[in-house]
Image (cartoon, rainbow, N blue to C red):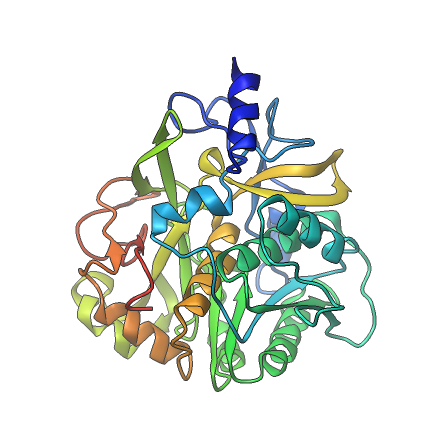
Length: 385
């Protein structure tokens, strides 16, 4: 019966398979090596923020997670739009990037985004191709495909850092800023535990005409950098619930990183929530589906741990490029991240965001208004972005 349902949904163009609960909760979740942080990495190297669902239909020849078509109605989004450039910053080389983006686009009826038509570009931040790393390739696949899914007409630039060191990644951010050219977004689905000198790097996220996005992390109630930088939009995570494939509700995801920063002071745009965050920058700012049990479909033909083809990914790595795409398609193009965040917080408590009322992450609980699990909530339409 499950295979019959899968065939029906694929024929209908959704490519998404859900059980009675609306999730794949019985399938195991794997943490790629690239998403693990060791003590030696603290303050030196970043990790990815994606998780991989491993189940009977989660890996293989057909998409089994949320798709652009299935998720757009959840967030009241159009199927077309976007302009300018979304730059994706990741480490190491993703050798099959353009091929995989083409497969993803064909599967879901998106415009082709290729080097030949000027839509896609891969840039080596250090001027030479870095070595490959399959976990970071998974990350890049997720990032470019879901930025394209949310803003189909925006240009996509994949900027590959020489390594996962913060020094190399921040240099790649500078390269990405130049690639955006003052009209677009930069997405960073990576980070690491906070460190005492982190604020000295905040200047990398101040390009004129560029809004920067970063994952809030995949450990509930724990902060990561640059997700707590006051100069980035911190992307938190939610869980989408369905019954028989029909959306029913959205709750805070237990893995959504967040909380008050140890080292970053509260920015002006968070004055409205000073009673919650106190004197330090609070994260996340707003959120998107990130639970691997309601995860998204990604195509990656670069094999990693024996997995390739269609995969189901979760983590706040889903949220960062997706929210960058949503803000892009909204078309406002703020002067910088601070201006974008001022707009977002001005819409706190309005119909521009779905207020997430339930769900816990670490010691934090989602509640009415702003919270350390989902920020202002999840997206509803294009106003207030």
